[in-house]
Amino acid sequence: MRIALYDEGADEALNIAEVAGYLAQKLAGAATELRGSPFAPNLPAEQVSDYARRMAQAKIGEITRKIPPSQEPLPAEIEYERRRILGRTRAFGVPYDGLKLQRLFCELIPGEELGPEYVHIIFTNRLLATWDEGDKRYHLRTSLYAVPCLISTSGLVEAPAKPREYYLARQQYERLGKDPLELKERFRGSFLDYGDERLTEVAKGYAMQAVFYALTGEPFCQDKGCRLYNAHWQEEMLFAQLESGYEFCPRHAEVLRHWRTK
Ligand SMILES: [Zn+2]
Image (cartoon, rainbow, N blue to C red; front, side):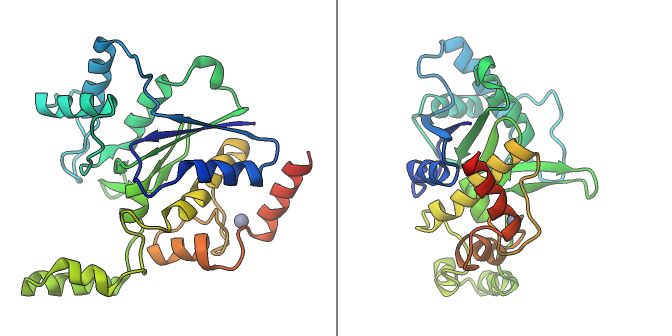
């Protein structure tokens, strides 16, 4: 198995080399490779412009409105994407249609590396969302598992819900015009934040979900203490990744043992 890890402007607290080392250790025999940006360094200018336009087209304007297929982005939006592709900025904020980005990133992977022996994992700080036909709105995602797998460091901060008390307190702070930094301080540690020193450790579990997706088609586990648990709350995510006292449930620990001895 070969695992390629990319840095598409991930949070600077993320140590991708450490994640790669973790995967290599858990999946003895797998070759890991750090690739930096998924965009080739010497892309022709027209190609950069084309990708930039399509990236900008994947931006979500309104969370309750599906992006029209012919959405025409503003020149400034395309220019931002061009600078980002060229590695000149990693600013972020607006969510993107994750599936559109995934299709675009897939085109960047060489054809001979699309086989089942390859796992491609792209770390990004872009916020990713997917459209839900059920409630007709986009939902933020921590990760999307396909080819390639996308893991959003901002998604790990924003997608799993924070404690209910946090949202109540936030309303109160807003009403009273109190300092939002003080609010963050009050709840510090109870959810993952930008630049969080726990980010790399949490990301290891999500990288492992990507590997399980690639090898078995099923990235998730029902066990709340297993690193493959699909957490919807920050509390659940931190428990599964850091606090449960074990990394993998007996079933997944056994699968890993089996892979190691194969
Ligand atoms: Zn499990």
